[in-house]
Length: 148
Image 1 (cartoon, rainbow, N blue to C red):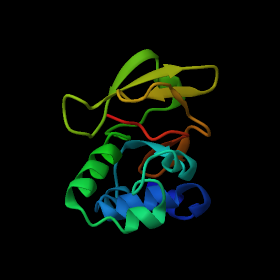
Image 2 (cartoon, rainbow, N blue to C red):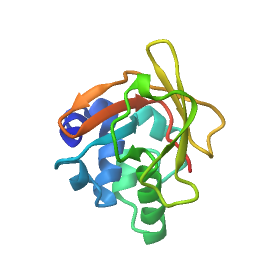
Image 3 (tube, rainbow, N blue to C red):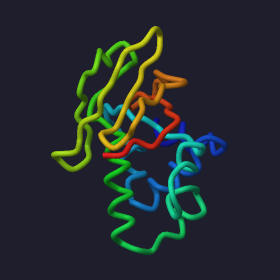
């Protein structure tokens, strides 16, 4: 499943796993579902300011407002259905599980790759690798944290 794929790859996803655990969202990806996760790498988290920039700092967050903000950012990376690269379209808007009004990502289908951009991001992030199939969805690995 999605959680297992992330957990067994700490070199790329320890920050994402720490964030999912801190926000009590990890269990969502252990069970059944039909999700797409635009999964930011550790390098993507490293671009953020502290305390969101690495797994150790994320695990040490105690401020509830920061935890709530992190939870909404994580939900902004998840859709309630599967999107493979070929489903992304040209400047399509995909609804995420984040709070309404700022819950849509912009996507582009490229040649055998996809691109995704959050409302608060300046640039698109390439899905690389993309289309990682899990029992409960699909993972699109991205090099930026998407900002609502």
